[in-house]
Every structure is written in structure tokens, then in C-alpha cells.
Length: 490
Image 1 (tube, rainbow, N blue to C red):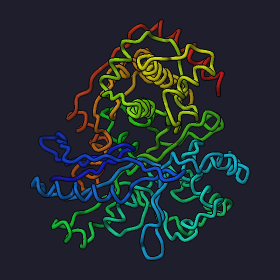
Image 2 (tube, one colour):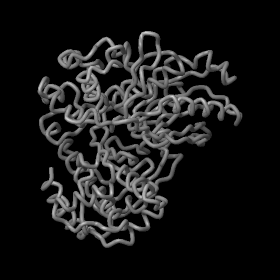
Image 3 (cartoon, rainbow, N blue to C red):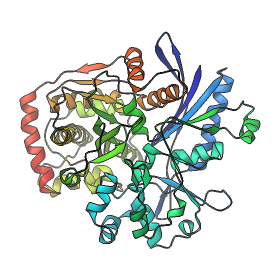
Image 4 (cartoon, rainbow, N blue to C red):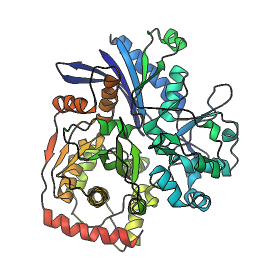
């Protein structure tokens, strides 16, 4: 049985085919495309119609390669949404979560609804990229798109609506809005009403694994393909990635490493208390009645933006070349807090990193080697900082860390992470998100019994590389300096 996973990240999209053979999941990437946001004037948008066009090209590619597809599912990044009008048409391009309209909105929202009330309803961390703050910014500016909207759909649900005509939101992606209570499985009506947002635009929620229609007849005729069932997988890409963690252990720590780094653990009940709120941890919904206690860390965005800045200056480097440059640099010269707001969407990332080091009275990294080393060491040390807090919140001690996602290709970051944690790191499955997407579909179709069986199949299908810690004392010393740096510039 062949099935399709559409996996759209913040920089690229992929289409993968999955098949189960001899108790192993066989995965083949058949199509890949860029996902480049577009800046127009002062705003930052997603090119959503281009993404839908590319999805149709992926469907065509599966046909041309001779696959008989039985179902498909879509996962994407969280937070962002599109608005549908009275005629069923998209009202404007969706804003990118890094669009600056939401700057300052946390304070405005919390002036109306106390921070504690928001957190204890939702369990979601406070960050200006959340859907709630973009919606409130649109309300404050009297954006006509919001005023005319009839339905809000998160990005994977919007793309699914284009395919099927069905307007629902899957629960894992709903939890990223900071407007959804995943325990009661409902939108937080008191919060929505207090902010004077139009509650009628929030559609029904469907559980992960729900079969939600099939591809529209018009698209089948356009592409000359048969009808294909569409399944609401863990539509938030982190939910799908965590579903694919290849372990039989009930308790584990993971890092889904890509444009964002999502470090956390899977739990049965969310951790919603004052300490979790003070440390700004999030409790996102996971697949099949699980939760993900985690922290969003800026991640490889820092590297990607340096690459983009240097390319604008005419210096083109591959990611492998950037890793080599970092390796050549002297260790532990200077550190940044990857999550500082100044790194969210700067005009020139390398200059911003230099400015942070200047503000914190550290040696300023001048060369590309020094800037890249600073980023990778800071990420590894931030991972330790976050993991230690997770262990305090859960009263657990994890023997090591699973790393999945595109970051597994960065051997230096994986080794640095093991060094910083003084624990082994098990890295693999660059395509963990798509693998989790496929696995949820197979569970929905009855081909896999449950999440535990699915993880055993994944463990049997994809090897992991183990990194053992090195230079533990040097990294311990660096960690103490790192903590002082980030605490001095909160």
C-alpha cells in the first residue's frame, strides 16, 4: 500500500512515498521545492498559491512514477493561518509568523487578559510569533481581511481545504495558536471574546488520524488522477517528527532540529504551573492523546540567515563549507542567546550577532569562522540549559537525547550537543517529520496497530548514529560562562 506525505517546512517542501515491506517502512522522496517567503512593502507573506501548485506537481509526479496512492497527509510549520471569505475564496496571502505586525502585541493582549489566565487555559509559551498576536494585530489595525473572514484555517488545513473543500482544523496544529485548550479539545471562548476576535471564524477541530474527505473531483480531472483519501495527520510538523522518534522507551528527550529547534519530552498530561509559565515552556498537543512539553529555540535559522546575508554580499558557501569553517575556529570565544528577540528577523544576522557580543562585553566575532562557531556552540549550550529545566519540571533524568530532522546532517552540532550535555546523542532520520506523517496514516488505515508499534517499525527501518561526549570539563566551564552571558542580557 503506497501513501503520500506532503511535508512543508519553513524553507522547503517535500513529497515522499511510503510503503511497508517486511515490517520495515520504505520511504522515497519523489519531489522537492523551495518555500520562499515574499516581502512586499513592510509585510512578510507566504506564497501559498505557489505551494499549492507545487503540491499538485507532487501528485503528478507520483502518478508518472507509477505509484497507486491510497491516502495522503499534509504537515507544515505551526502558527500561521489563512482566512476564507463568504464565497469560499482565500482573502489575501497569509502573513509569515516573522511579520513585524505582531511586535508589542503580547503586552497589549496581556493588558486585557492576564498572562496567567492565558497560560492556564492553553499551556502555550508566550512568543510574538503565535497566531493570537497576529490576529490581535489585525484587529487593532482594522484589517479588512479579518473583518470579512468567515473561516480561519491553519496552513496545513488551508492546503487541505484547497484539495478537499473541507474546512476543519487538526488538533496538533490548533494547539500552536495559543487560543486552543487541548485538554478540553475546544477553542478558548472566554479568551477569544475578551480580545473581541470573531469567534465564529474558528472551525471544528478533528483528532489526529481522522479521515477528512478525498481530493476534489475537479482536481482529479485536472491531474488525471483517481480520488485519494486525505487524512489529518499530526499536521504540526513537530508533532509528526516526535511521533517518529525511534524508541520503545516511554520516557525520552528529543530535539527536532531544523529552522527551529524544538527540544522537549513526550508526556501524558500537560505541565501547566507557575514555574513552567515563568520559564515560558509550551505544552503542544501531540498525536494520539500525547502532549509535548518543549521549548522553541531559534535553531538553524541563525545559520540560514548568515548564509543569506553573505550571499547578498557575493560570498556563496555551502552548509558543509560553513561547518568546516566553524570547526577551524578557536572554541569558546563568545556566546549568544539564540532565543533573544533581536535574532527573530534581523536585516543582517552576522552583524546582529556581533552587536549582541558587543552589548555583552565579549570578544566580537569578526570572521565567518568565529561567527559560525559562536552560533553552533551557543545552540549546543542552550540545548543543555533547556533540557535541565525540562528535567526539573518533570522530575525526570534522561540518559541521552534523540536528534531528528535536517540538523542531523550537521555532525559538528550533534557532537557539540553531546559534549554540552555530557550524554550520548542519537541522531538520524533527516525526514522524521514525513516519516511520522506516514506512520499516522498507516495507523488510521489500520495497517499499524498504534503509536508504539509504529515506533518499533521505525526503529527497525532507520539507523541512528551515536555521538559520545568529549571534553566534558571544558564544556562545563563554557556552560557557566554561557549562563552568565544570557542572564546578563535578558
